[in-house]
Length: 317
Image (cartoon, rainbow, N blue to C red):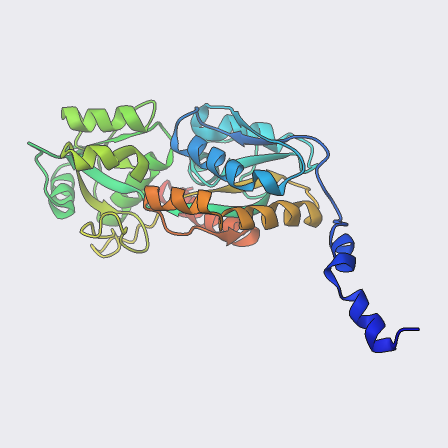
């Protein structure tokens, strides 16, 4: 007969611990939809497909990226908000559909209550850019001095009414005491082309949208709307450094419909957390020049809520 110590040692072997760990409170039983509110090939789509690749081996079912573009991501958000909270659908949230569009108009979902936050994957500052070669502005101070000198004398492009790129200039105008002329476009790409063409003075740009254009001298980076300077563009000051308290990072992470159980949330969180430690994801961050954006579900929701409240305040709501 084995001794008591030997019996306890036997129970502690991985062979016996393994089955106990393999009995989760919840596991998916069919493919999981990863819903993205923007078109294939854009920054959000790349994030979703990269993390799906990184975690594919950690799920017993396929993960399917579904693009549902429109209304600054609000169409996809509405779709997920109406879905059953059974853990089989997640929304890539944290951008305009969560932090900006709801400040501009009423929506059929509540960004603070219609979702179960799971994990934040990325966060990156939004850059203020102007025309490079032959442009009229070489610093953020020059740009804002011109904007303060005469209402709407300086124009800014955006990816659409109510998007984060629109709201950042509302926040900046409020902080700097300036009124700029808003010229909306259908996306980030067209807005940057308008800056290069000289039809508008400035715009907000994400790193993946502007990098080649900045390297080619077509665009000039003046500042970044984040807490710290960006490693890719250390010469660009933060708006806070320049005296304007504007922090508006574009975040991306997963949320599900409100009502998901803690077990469902933990299941997705833990696998996505493992995924962001993989070489696949780390290589993506290096190429994009982005910092580690991880936050757990509650902290992710709190960050989205803070930005939304700030934009609502800038609109007087």
